[in-house]
Each structure stands twice: as structure tokens, then as C-alpha cells.
Image (cartoon, rainbow, N blue to C red; front, top):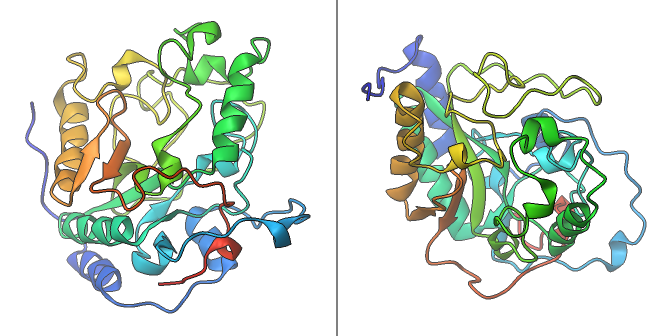
Length: 289
């Protein structure tokens, strides 16, 4: 295994500035600032019924308020995911987590910034209605529009049996994130163009859908055994990159799901037995810090 390069990227002043931002308190962000962080345009979805939606307990926060330098690429707000359409409950492309999880991610981010890297989240709190959306999709065996990228070697009728889809998700408890690492400076990832040719998620990085994250051997949400964190076929720099992510987060109290290199849960969980269904939206939050 090659040693992980730890020399900060040039110029050093840029890393120092990002580190200072990560440590400094920031004013409460509005919805448009979160959308800028995630690289997404403001949502044009209807707001009907939002006044009667459930609210998040005060233990939940927007990650951007606590750790503004962590990149956000919230895939379920977009059509670029294994379903192929925006997922129910994602009203804004933002990361919501429990306060303890956000603080732990901020500590991990400060550690990585010193080494010239940044964290990037793909998904955080996930409403139960989003999980229900996944279940409905998995039962529709005729809808395989995203198969070539996300599950090319798995038959859709095995997604439940093989554990890729379930009726409950730890994400709905608020302490789990899907996350990766990007080397700085990290250029924005281009938007997905619906209908564009799909490439298997385990193809060489230069052939897969572009992602400014480091190469970990597969893309995010790759339904394949190559996504297992310690799969022996993942070697060299790809394995080193997985270990950089894993070791950095483990030092801050996160536990990795062995079947998914990107999936981490902060322990002890604030809500170990509760599955929430409030939408992913600034309006859902009762506390901003």
C-alpha cells in the first residue's frame, strides 16, 4: 500500500484560510447559501403542505452552520442517484444532522484541512418518506433506468435480499452520514445531465461520472461488493484513500458500515431508536446552532 500523501497543497495560505473558517463561528445561513454550498440551484418544487410538516427536535442542526467548509453534494435532491429522480422529502440540497454529529464532523474537517483535504457529504439525515420512496422503486422491477451505473452486476429483484434496500435506515435517526474526502483545491463537480450515457460505478475513475473526491475504487452508492470497505481487490492509493477517510472519522467517534466505504455513524447516537420523517429543509429546524 502506498503511503498517504500528507503534505498540504500549495499554496499553504489557502489551507490556513480554510482552517480558520472551519474553526470560526459563522452567522446563520439562509437557504440560498446552502444551495450555493451544494452546487445546486434553488428548488422549484411546490411548497404545498409544508406548514403542517413535522419539525426536527432541537438537537438537529444544519451542518453548514457548524462546519461551513465541508463540501455538500446531496445526490438525493437531484436525478443523479440509483432511482433516477429527486427523492421524496429532500426540499433543499442541505445536510442536516444531530449536534453531536456536526461537531464531530467539524473536528474531523479541521484535521483534514491541515493535510490539504476536505470532507464532502453525499447524504446525511434521511426522512422516512425517502426510505419509503426507495422501497417503492425497488419493488418496481421494470424501472432500471440507472442500473448501468449503480447496480450493473446485481439483479434488481435481489436488492432486498442482498441488503442494498431496507424498509428502515439509520440515516433517519440523524447520526449517520454518507461521506468522502476531496483533495484541495477541489473544483466543483459538473451537474448530471438526465439521459446522459451511464458508466458502471466501479469503472476506472477517469471513466466514471466525474467527482472531485479522491479515488476510492467505486463511486458513491455503488451496489457492488467492491464497495465493501476492506475488499481485497481495492489496493494502492484507492485503499489508502479509504483508510484516510475511515481513520479520520473513527478518531472522532464514527463507526463505518463494512459493506459501504462511505457510510459512517457517530456513536453514541443521539436518537438510537427513533426514525424521523421531517423534510430536509431549513424550515424543519427549530434550532440554528
